[in-house]
Structure formats: structure tokens, C-alpha cells
Image (cartoon, rainbow, N blue to C red; front, side, top):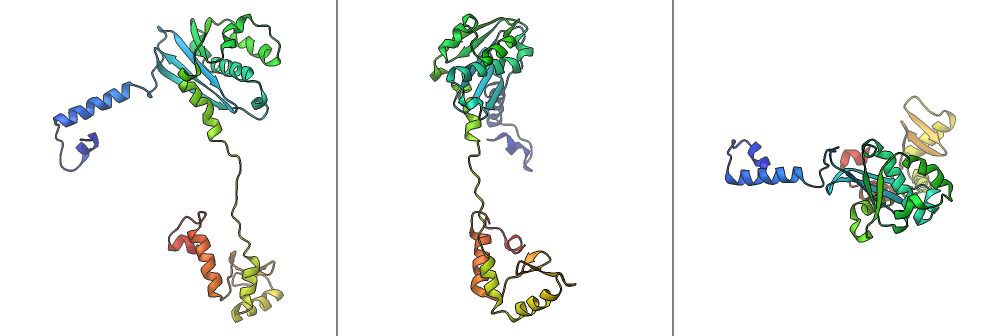
Amino acid sequence: MASSELLTKKGFVWSEQATVAFNMLKQAMESTPVLALPNFQLPFVVETDACDTGIGAVLVQQGHPVAYMSKALGVKNSKLSIYEKEFMAVIMAIDKWRCYLQRGPFTILTDHQSLCSLTDQHLTTELQKKAMSKLLGLQFTIKYRKGSENNAADSLSRVAHLLQLDALSICRPDWAQAILNSYEADPEAMDLLAQLAVKSPDSRGYSLDKGLIRYNGRLYIGNQLALQTKLISALHDSPVGGHSGIHATYQ
């Protein structure tokens, strides 16, 4: 029985099924993926990861997530080495959650083993020199964890890549010539063309735009059934049209 069924007009009846549903709801609210409130009496753990196009991190206490971070790498940063990307993930996570981490010792988990000796390495790149200043005054230990066990941070590092827009296509059929041809078999359209050649726009709302007749901004289609059917089909049946209703298609 769903808890929502108790809200119907049948009345409020609490049964054994309702108790089971309520207990399941409480358990779901207390477990992942619900975020935990930070407890400053417990140590923090920062899990980080990076991929070709993004970085991700999770702030954890006793195996329960406190906060998530996911960020896409720009064109410049996507060209960095994998070491530099993993290093950037660590630095950006610490910078984001510094207010939590500066209160005491914390652990950083990474699947890039060379980062475990980060504090003993020579600073050879501009990224290292600028970023290491963010670690000053913090008490941390970096530990290696297999990539297969670093699931949360790994998934977050790829979110930006999945949402990246690589191309945008616009469907724009060229109906202009077909509409112009439809005027030839439409006496009313031919009269309008003659009038608008003298004065455009006129007092009724008709105007001439590159040879095409418009009425209050909308294109005037000649009296040609085949073309009208084709236009309605394109505006209604195509993915762009989305099978709109009568009024939406007409507009």
C-alpha cells in the first residue's frame, strides 16, 4: 500500500501495510543518496576523480555523502595531462569545501597513485605552484584507491561530458520558391501582389517581403492544396512540430 493512498477521499485508515510503507519511507530518508549533515566531531574524507572532459568529487563522513561537486573542463584545461587533471580535482574540491576541512585532519582518496606523494614532489608547473598555496595550513593525508572502487567521484567527473552540447541542428526548409509558385494559380494572390507593388504595407495588414505576401507578419500561402498539405504535415508531423493540436498548428 502506498502512503499516498491515505490521502484519498476514502478516509484515513492506518493499517499494517501503512506501517510497513512508513518505515520504508523513513529508511529511505536516512540512507543514500540523501545527503548527511556535516558532523564536525567526525573526520571528513574527500573522494576525487577526473576524466578527459570533467572532474568530480564527493565529501564523505563515515561512508555517507555530505556534498557533491561536478565541473566540466574548458578547452584549455581539457588539454592537460591526466596527472594535472587529477591534481586539479583535488585542489578544486579542497577549495570548495575548505570551510569544513580546515577544522581538523582529513583524508583524500584518489585513483591516481602518484598524487599520494604530492607534498614531496617538486613544483614544476604553474598549476602546481598556484594550487599548492591552497593546501597551506591544512592537515591531510592522500591515499590511493582503485578506480573500480571510486564510483561516485568517477560518475560525477563524467556528468559534464554527458551534458555537453557538441552540435546544434536547425531544421529550416526552403519553402520560399514553392510559395511564390503557388501565387500563380491564385487570382487573389495576384491581385494582392499588384496592390502591394504600389503600397506596402496596406491598411489591412498585408505587406510584401522579398516577393512573398505577409498578413500581419504571417506568410500568405497561395490556393494550392498540395503545398498547403505539405506545409501542415511539416509543421505537425515532424520532430520539430511535435504533433501539436489544431490551434497550435494553425498558429
